[in-house]
Image (cartoon, rainbow, N blue to C red; front, side, top):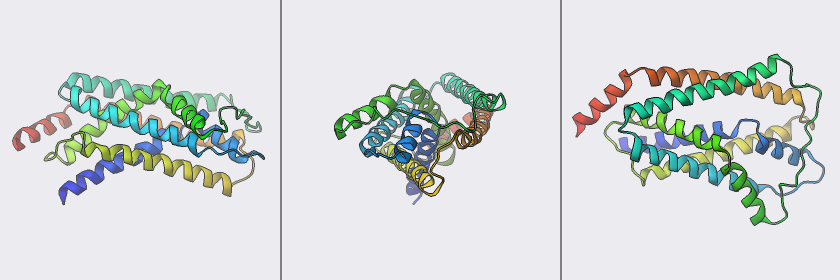
Length: 240
């Protein structure tokens, strides 16, 4: 039964960070909003499928790579945690500062060309795959997630080791998390006003920015504090 809890924990991490990876108001979310609110609609399911699949691939490979090659190097893991925490705090501060400086006009409308959505499902899927896959920020983000997820699973389930088979549950969680976000996002657009204004973008941006700052600070504290790592390694040694 404990093993199923272990798998469920990995799945929940994938779902949670799958949602987080999809929420920033980058070009993908804006394209989805513009497409839904426009008069002429195009099918974007293949496009989003490409985005979600490459997101899951990044999540799996970075988690597997960190666990396979870097988990035994405490200094490397600490460095990733500190660097990732600082980067996330920095991104959050940028969003907050932009809002305080009033760089966003609350009355403006977002106009985006939909040339990225092609008539061919294969071409649209490829566009989504490349648009998401070419973003180096996703690699850095999932590297940071892998560092923390490895620590969390080691703390809560020291009796179980992560390997490539049970880790497959992680990208499944990412796919579920991404699908949940885009489904909720579309529902909000459907239930909300027929106007995707700058004021709505600013409100969501501020909420996400403060969340990133809190998440980054938590990562910094957890990375600098050596107690957790010592306890985890001690438990693993006792089990072996």
